[in-house]
Length: 611
Image (cartoon, rainbow, N blue to C red; front, side):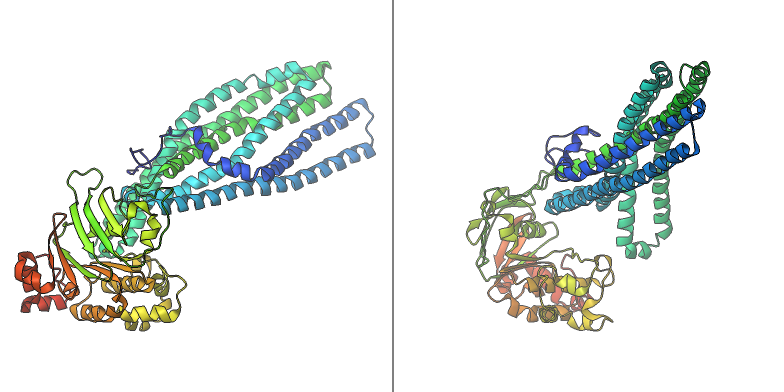
């Protein structure tokens, strides 16, 4: 992976933790405390299952010894068989209980951790999502969480079962004959050493599997979200080939994991069978010589079988926990990420009603860059002002909008809303006063009504229709088969660029905020529709502060004041007529856009004011 989820970067998180560190378990401590009683009930049931399994060989030993001594009767054997059946039924019942309690706990951990991750992601700012792809985050919420779920479910069950059953069976074997027990467990240190060696390699290989899955997920997401571009450039075969190569690498990485994983079980099985062979040789001789009874020999073999699962489970448990720790470490890195923009703990939540905005010596430089995008900018916007902003590409218009919408931190200079320094109040206080239409319109794969009402989800259908009419999109929505309940696909793929922009404008109008910012939000509509929108939204803008950024003159011509930006500074400001008279850049684009050829091109939606 190429984002900070795979490599810690300064300023992104708290103190780093080593990859694969068991210290990552602290993420799960709250859930273990919260569900301690549930886990206690689950492990109690698990202990009962193990104890009943350990008692069955004792019943068999008793029956075999009675047979050997000639004291066995049909009634005795029937009673022994009935007792074993009762124990088996009890084992089944308690096994169902522990599966519900412990495996259910692992699913609760998965759900709660996923919800916690999602809430944390919502709190991160734009900088994080510029460095990390959606595919990386999706991989954490799917593959990595599944690995954690398995480790906290079957992983802890297998570990507890292996330790408890292994020790208990070992003690029963010692009780039968200590020497034979030592012979049976002699090969086990080799298994422990091998498991340790293979597990250390498993972490690195599994980490590569998860990272490759992130790349694969992001590639699929980006391809289908840009499917129009793929088809327009006839790149279906090329993208298919790239996907196949990513998939091949993913398979190869999984095979490398499988090599280690596959080695653990055969080796565990070999060592278990070696122990069985030693017991058959030495234990058989002892039974023949009368040093142990036939019942002891049968019971000993049964206990050795019970130990076989713990021996073989060691490799599986090591794999589950290694995968879980690796994934948990990756999730921990995400949870350690801190937003670059955050409110002070003591910052009050205030109401901003007037919409008065003032910037003093406002500067902004993107991380890793030296040249400021905004350079000591001074701007005073009285409440209720319609302000137009124009300028060449890269002049800092969109960055200024992001600062006003509190999407970027104000670290150099000052920004005031209604006379309040934005750094002295909560971020939500400012954001709750701003309705923002970004340059790149984002829509959800949901209904049109949902997208318009996103900022005000409890709005009535009449209000939604009213703002849609104001944005000149109602007639087109009404012509769709399901009207406002039409689902628009990923990022509004079923809509044109102009339709997406008008839905975004309707969404901003519905929020009814004192400040409205429209960042080049009419660039994809023709001039006739543009004039219709400007005229119809005029009633919504009365008494509100409205900032319109545009490459075309028409949307800002009637503004109370127009600002011309250049190199992060305000090069000039004034009314439409004043700027035509004295500003060369403004008069040039006005002349270009109002000339006969330009008007014809603008009607086709091709003029952006940049030439």
